[in-house]
Amino acid sequence: MEKKDLSCVDCGVLNCNKRDSEYPGFCPTAALSEEEIREVMALYEDPDNHRIAVISAEVEADFYRKYTRVEETAEFARRMGYQKIGIATCVGLIEESRIFARILRKKGFDVVGAACKIGSVDKTAIGIPEESFLGKGPGPVMCNPILQAGLLNKEGTDLNVVIGLCVGHDTLFYKYSEAPVTTLITKDRVLGHNPAAALYQCGSYYSHLMKEE
Image 1 (cartoon, rainbow, N blue to C red):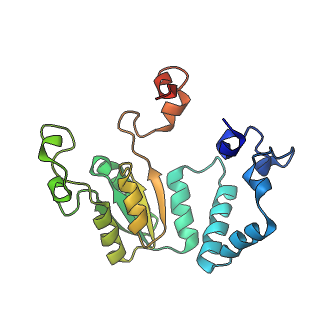
Image 2: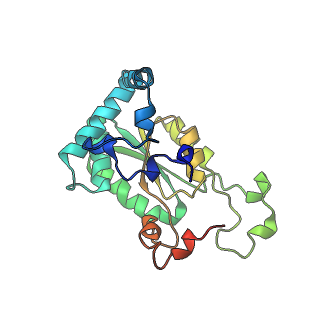
Image 3: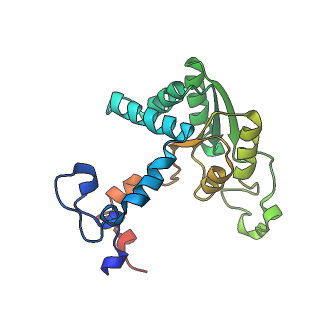
């Protein structure tokens, strides 16, 4: 691999984090100009950006290795002063979303959920041929992340939480959500919604992932 193709994922130094070594020659941090850094840091002067950045750092520091992701999400929302929380959920994880909604309500939040099949529109409406889903698990009703976002926008949610939306559907939800978004659960139908397991096992059970195509 040529030097020009290397980036942070190829770095074994991570001097940007520890500051106890030297930056490698391909390091993006070393290549940044002072002006570029100033331009980005100026964006944190926006009141919303500044508040999110500061409070997320506080939650990390105060509850490091103490709080679960569920607890961190609720604490972040509380410190941000958010009141209405939207849940954009896959219908396959509706029970997890129900439990999360109960937890949030116990903590005093208003909660509104939007399931991925909202509107109950056929997949053929967006040009997916009927034969591609007949007799298969997903069924004929399309996931509708744009409508999910639209409903939560209409409800005026302060923060939206994604629970198990499919790859790509989550992309569209992030794109159309007017409220800030965080993710609680990332879907992986094979690995019990723990996609990192495939990375941990790429030297054994999932070694086929490392084969060049």
